[in-house]
Picture 1 (cartoon, chains in turn cyan, blue):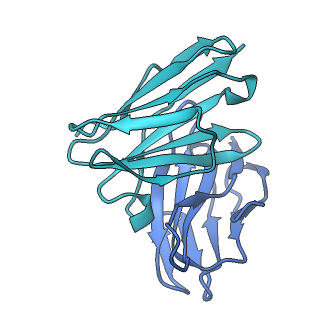
Picture 2 (picture 1 turned 60 degrees about the vertical axis):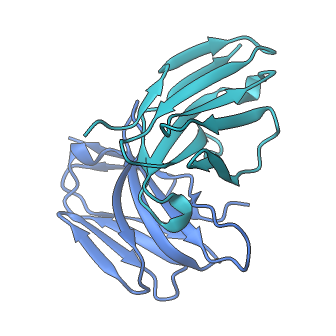
Picture 3 (picture 1 turned 90 degrees about the vertical axis):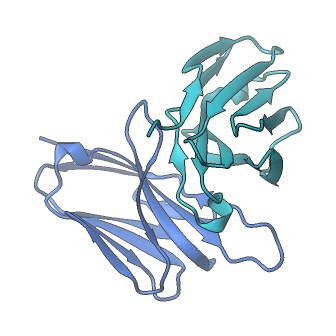
Length: 115
Length: 114
């Protein structure tokens, strides 16, 4: 069974640009969650999608957005990049979603560097 | 403020030693999960505990959920270099009418030296 796939693995962008990250969940998983991981703050929840609907949202500015397609694949977009957006962005899929206590299966992340 | 506090933040030990890491909160959780993350990879689930006082063993790893479901510990016996990684606890807080979100601690970075 293929795991969670995130693309690209590494990304370097300049302040003010925008970026789109992609996540393909495990087959059959309808929930996709996104997290930002930094050394100082740890894992911070961005949002969760379930069956193409945003079910939960963290405390991030509106520059961070996401969507989920009918095949459960998800994308997240960050507009007007800031230096502080440099982080490892992790996607996790699960059957019912983290809010239901369902185990999360993480991808290996996208390392975003903003210069 | 961090809902889940993990300690210690860093731990460096020799192969064969025992260790315990802690995950504490003032909030009550309906369940708590432990993950291990190795460099360059995403976190991998080790265990989920759901009952207060529950103890689960996974080979040399022992996980305990506090009676009041506010804290948890992970004990590793005879640590090996392969245990090296970032150990994360994550909990589902019990809320009243609010949307539930899985919250993570900042993790304990464990290094086991051969």
